[in-house]
Length: 100
Image (cartoon, rainbow, N blue to C red; front, side, top):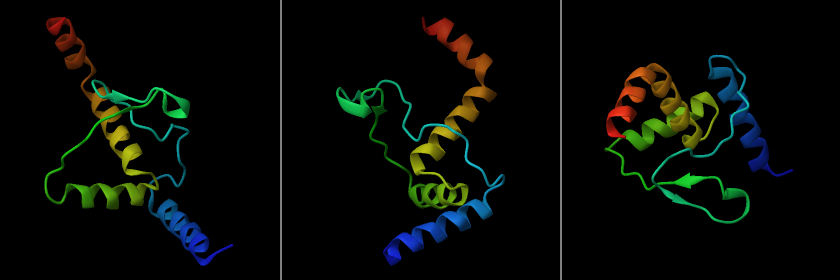
């Protein structure tokens, strides 16, 4: 096993120590977005992707916070969106009705 592999294992241990629960949920680490380009073949067939332009400093913030949580930036963003969807479910439902 290479030194790089040991380093990665150490980073995972630190990330888990720093996370709130120390455990990861069994949520797929993949983007879940709408109105984006969708892969058509292979294991990525169900994934949808977008290009995202971030305000200065936000990429660094996302990378640090994702690492603290022990997840990828994609997973971290999906978790944030899921939390927002839960918190604003009624507003979302009403808006969908109005927008048809």
